[in-house]
Amino acid sequence: MSGMMHMMLGSSRGKKVTVALTSGTSWTVPAGVYAVDVHCYGPGGNGYSGNGGGGGGGAYAFKETIGVTPGSSVSYGIGAGGSGNDTWFGGGPAVRAKAGGNGGSVFGGARGDAAQCVGDRKYSGGAGGSGGGGGGAAGPLGDGKDGGGGGGGGGAGGGSSPAGSGENGGNGPFGTGGGSAGGSNGGDGTNGGGGGKGSINGGKGGMAIMHVTDPGGVSYGPGGGGGRSNGLGGGVGGPGGSYGGGGGTYGGAGGAGLIILEYYT
Image (cartoon, rainbow, N blue to C red; front, side, top):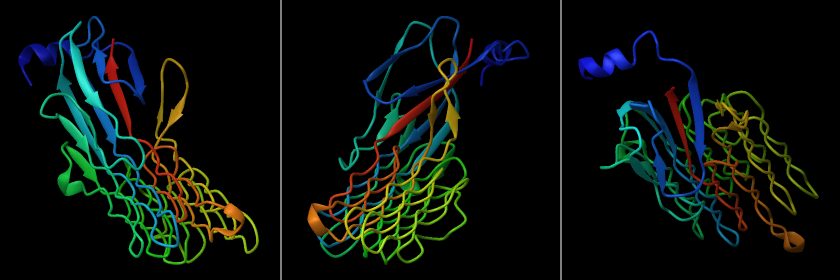
C-alpha cells in the first residue's frame, strides 16, 4: 500500500459503511472513498430434479483494501443459484468465489473449491450429498459442510457438524440443523443450519448472519444446504440458504451469490 493510502486510511478513517450487492453489474465508488474490503460468496448448485444428488455449496473469498478511485465504476458479477457462474469483483478479477455444482442423477454437486478462488482468504463450500442433502455455503468462519447421505443439508461455514447427520441437517455456526419429518416437511435450519429431509418437502437451509448493512440494518450471510425430498405428492427438495447453500434433491434451488463491500467515509 502506498504512503498516501496509509494517510487516507489512518486514524481518521471516519464512519464504516457496509453495502450488499445482490444484483447489477457495476458499482460507482462514492466520493472520498479510496479503498474497499470485499467479501464474495459463490452461488450454490441446484439439487437434481429426481432421485439423485444435492447441489454443492458456494465458496467464499475475501480481499482487504482494494484501491479504488472516487467516482469511477467497478465491474462485478453475481452468480445465480444453479447457474455455475462464479461471483467476482473488480478487474482481473480482484476477488472471485467459485460456484457450487448442480447435483446429478447419482452423485452430489461439486463444492465451490477454494483453490479456484481469488482473494486473501478463501474457503470451500460443502459437497452435495449423493443421498440428496445440499452442501453448506462457505463463509468468513470456514468451509461449508457436506450434505448428508441420508438427505440432511450441510451447515454453513464454521458449523460444528461435519456434515448433514443422516436425515437431519447439520448445525451451522450459530444455529442448528432442521430435523427429519417422516410424513411431511423437513425442518428448516436456523442461523446457518442445514435443512432436514422430508417425505414431501425438504427443509430450507438457514442463513448465518455475518454482515449487517449500515445504513439499512439488513442481515446477510452464508446459507446451510437444503434437505432432500422424497418427491411425494409433488414435493420438492429444500432450497439452500439465501446465499450460497446447495439445494436438496428433487429440485431444491441453490442459494444466490452475494457481494459485501465495506469502506469508510
